[in-house]
Amino acid sequence: MKITKRQLRRIIKEEKQKLLNEQKVRRIVRSHLTEQAGPNLPALARGKDLVPISMGRWMDQIGFAEAGSGKVVISGDQLEELTYDEATEQVDGNLWVPLVQQIMASANSTTFNSDELVDFGLSNTASFDPQQEPVFNDPGYSELYRSGKLVVRG
Image (cartoon, rainbow, N blue to C red; front, top):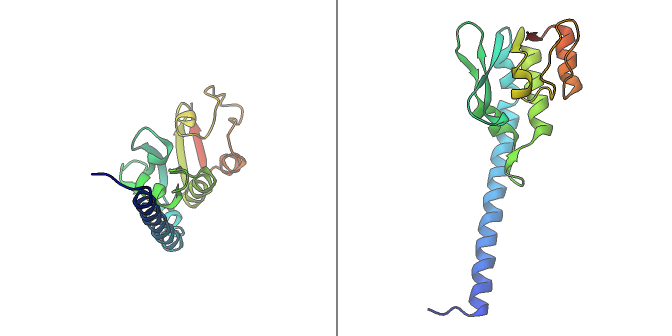
């Protein structure tokens, strides 16, 4: 079956419009979820002692569990849903980092092992001296560390 240039242009135009409409719907849903669920994630952490848990290979698949019980308080899917950028098809660090920091600030504490700081994207430095503050990727993590909300174990 042969397709004319006109038909091909029409097909491309229709498919492009479908994609744009799909992105628009996703953007609206994400915006609604952010308004509804965004403030609730830190509320889920309030008053708990948390530990980070790896739910996969990438940073957007990290969640938080209640220390001692292992019960998942906030899943990686919840974090990803609120921070995923359709345009880049990746988690937006400009959204992810502040949201994680809000969660950590709401909790009593979040405890990381020193080797997890690099794994979870909080620091680029693997070495940890308990006498000195770790070098964090974002000043918000430093503030959480100084306030005792972010705990690092050697």
